Length: 193
Image 1 (cartoon, rainbow, N blue to C red):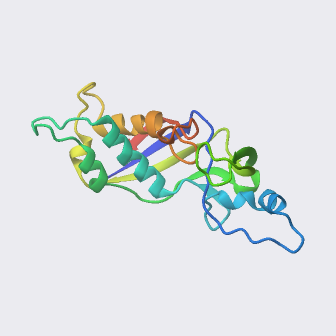
Image 2 (image 1 turned 30 degrees about the horizontal axis):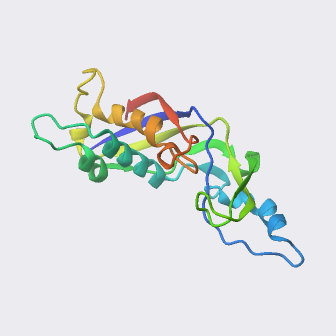
Image 3 (image 1 turned 180 degrees about the vertical axis):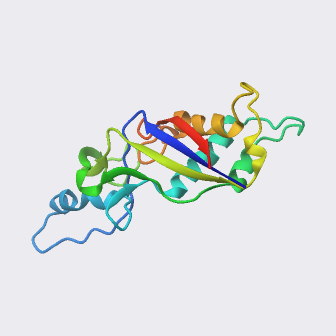
């Protein structure tokens, strides 16, 4: 079992959309309530610092492994997908260096039911983080993912898939995997501890 710290830097804005229950105050319109409570879409730690949920990174990595379908040498048609799904964990949710009070708002005119092309539209407000960086801690239980990359022997399959995750899958709301362009990232540093 090995622990790897990867420094991820956003190459596009990052936006979160955590679900929360909106309760109207007396005399408050739905729009006024949304304008007052939009920061509740953020994932934060107990100190109010914005975090990237560990499960978001884990799912991003697993989706990338499936998307890239890299074959395991000597195993026929087997790919690394199951090795990433079962053999890699994200230890904790990394912070991005901002408190929730520093985050900006993005106002969008979107379908009220959340479905593309919906007939009724309303204003919705989401947090947007134009620039971000985080140190993510990955625990590698299945060291098969640390084999040398077929493209470049000085790199590992884990590095290739993590970079693919940032390019093709992304994290957060409106990410590339969901036909968006937010949440893309690059790997600017990687080290084993």
